[in-house]
Image (cartoon, rainbow over all chains, first blue to last red; front, side, top):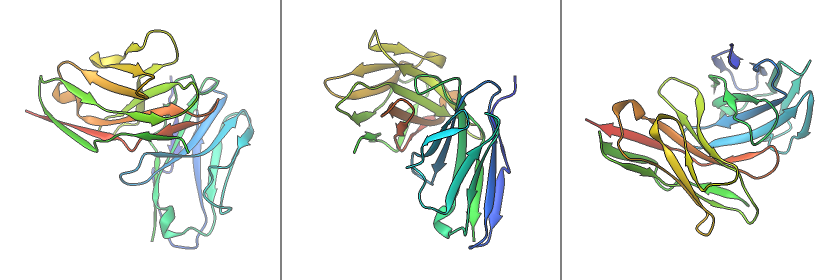
Length: 114
Length: 112
């Protein structure tokens, strides 16, 4: 079956612009995660959705970051007024329920802020 | 704060030699432990996980890991590596019922 997909695969933007990243999880997976991976770093947890609800938004780096999930499916991560330090690979993963389940990762969106 | 340490950023090893990738974590509570692998130009995928029971966990592609609670470690091993094992390996530990903390990754470099 189809895996997790993310779009765009690459995004180059100018400092100060807004960007929107999209994640399509595996159908039926209720849990969805967003991570950020900077060069040489591990994955940094950003936000978790269970269905359409995000019980913990504490991982979002600043109020410039927001995320939503609709219909228990597609999720979008929005970064407003991008800064150079936002440059990273943004990964989305989904799992059937929660933390003990295997997380299935998308290919990521590489964001470059000039 | 809870953390995961992968001491080696790169591990070079000859083909058909054994390998151990180290992972230590800091946590005072029961945890679930994971190893994920990222092959070149591919997404992350689960290699193995420890939830409970036997402390020796077997995963895909001949890898295994041993949970050591007293040493708070979850080292990954393979008795004989192949060129196709070239990848970056990430250790992760649960810190809540939904959140994982990830190590910085270890690049396994196979020398012919």
